[in-house]
Length: 95
Image 1 (cartoon, rainbow, N blue to C red):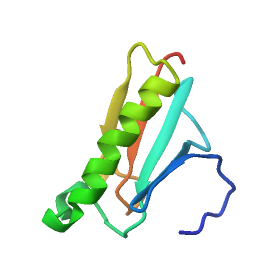
Image 2: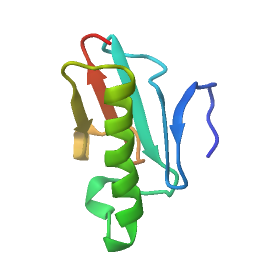
Image 3: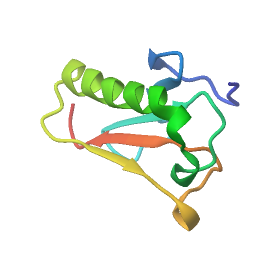
């Protein structure tokens, strides 16, 4: 994976990377992106089970690490998805 802007990696596994959103919309705004090119949620298949396990483990880790009292995990699709790469937003109003 290469990025046009530098990011601070919060967690990285063999299947994903989590980092602060470069232009956050919330006080706590992290992107979780699979390392494999997957255009959208509808393109996940059974071979992506390791990514899904890492996704949930990463969310649990970040929620606990940052002691988030309330949070959301959001995935956009279709016209709501601004970039053609599956990604999840872990957001919270405070950390």
